[in-house]
Image 1: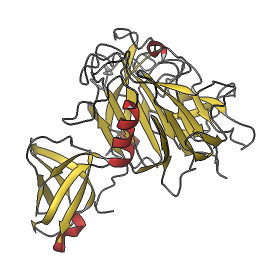
Image 2: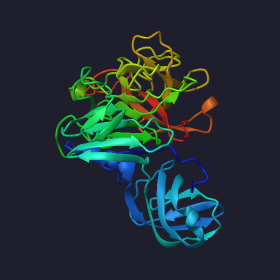
Image 3: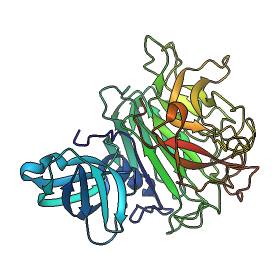
Length: 401
């Protein structure tokens, strides 16, 4: 790894200067996933100078990088080639520069240098017209696959597979066709159209979350509707002997975009997380939900006052709880931890956070930065208020595992 700090967790969102802005069109979701999962985006020519362990990158125009994002540097030649590769941004001193930590000696880098937003490093082994299959490249991954059908203008259909031989053929589907024909639903936009909507993607090489506000008035306006957090990948296994079939695919079972808030990672109201099999490795696809170790119940994060309102009137604290995977109809035993996600068992978060806000972790999360993610317990078309909308947090520092 070129960077002296961990770069495994990456985040992207529609409020970045040159972020992809997928409209309500067929294929728009796949274009977004390609940019964030496998290709990167916003390539710029740049110069780099190093002084005192700090590399300063400069470019002309605007760039998507923000503090704590990860950029990919390429093209450095000569004695400073260690600058190439992934680098975590530590600051944005100006609109046309950023910095990152390095162990490279002082000086000016040579070469035809470029930077871009570094992708999550997933593979796309199969593709078709408005169809795509994504797979983690990590050697530690379960190597299950996500098939995305993006032929609709307003939504995507998603199915996981234990194995696939082409974009339309696979074995071990989750969910099965008998459970929900065509797959689960991920929203894109409330109607066909050219305008983009607010979105976020946060992930590592084995798990990614897709947050979308399909009724948002613009790519930066989250207030016109509610958001839902979906995703795919490997949880953190709790079974000592291993659990090869715990891969999570979270999606709505509702075909109406306005109703796709059910059972996401921050709203445990329904069992909407499909895994290939139960923890024993037997059988076929089985549904789960995401529970919080504290203050979960059937409440969306940041809505119910399990531990009072935020900020705590005594010490001003924000409380964060890890979340875990629970099989539907079981006794509630945790199967696996859900990486990076934190539930807020307090109310009044809508009045105190905005989408993308950073928050410093405390206690066991000290040294980590979290990003605020809006969530809801009602329709995605509803106007957000403190009774139906809250915030959860996702760790953007890492590592998650």
